[in-house]
Length: 245
Ligand code: IPE
Ligand code: IPE
Ligand code: MG
Image (cartoon, rainbow, N blue to C red; front, side, top):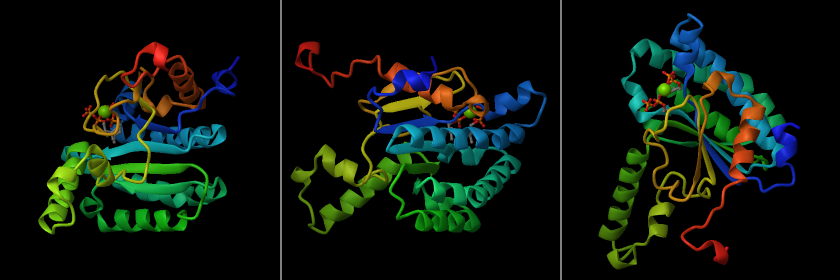
């Protein structure tokens, strides 16, 4: 029985976030350059987006490029940016066909003009779609996002739009880049690394974690469904006792 069959009629996470990791190692294992791994990672993205749509996941956040990734060699950064522009160009029709709405989290001002422009075009074009919401984390880091939220809230306090004593965790959530999305139910990281690498630190306070050794370019629909299958075995208590659930 496939994992897809196993999870049908089970609870499907509303929001899944993925740290897509292992492209460089995948390429190296094959005796190729790192960028070869990034190129092959695109198919895994396509498979995952389709897989999420097929089973009714509502939000899918993909960590594509972190703030820290800007410190990689310029050739790799440039290649990743080119790949991004090409992927947007190649995928826009199928995203429209599959009713996918694209959103972005991250520092748009830090992106090369062309990338920011293509990304904005894609966001605008898909904005009326009503199926899966695909959130691309590009030039994103959680510390950047939280710092930005603190700046916004501080300005509101300074302008007397909010009283310091009225600040709650909701205030913070509303000022993050993810304000309009629910927190992830499931976080997947590929490539056998057990860390968060500055991803959604606030939002994953109660998220279930799933780590797999599979390298991102090898990740396919069944890997995605397997993660959901594991998610369904978890007992989410949110601080309560088992009897209270
Ligand atoms: C993930 O793969 C893609 C990005 C971070 C852009 P890596 O490029 O990190 O691949 P590894 O971890 O070096 O194998
Ligand atoms: C995390 O992967 C960022 C993305 C997947 C975009 P990295 O490969 O950059 O993470 P570290 O540096 O190994 O923690
Ligand atoms: Mg990596």
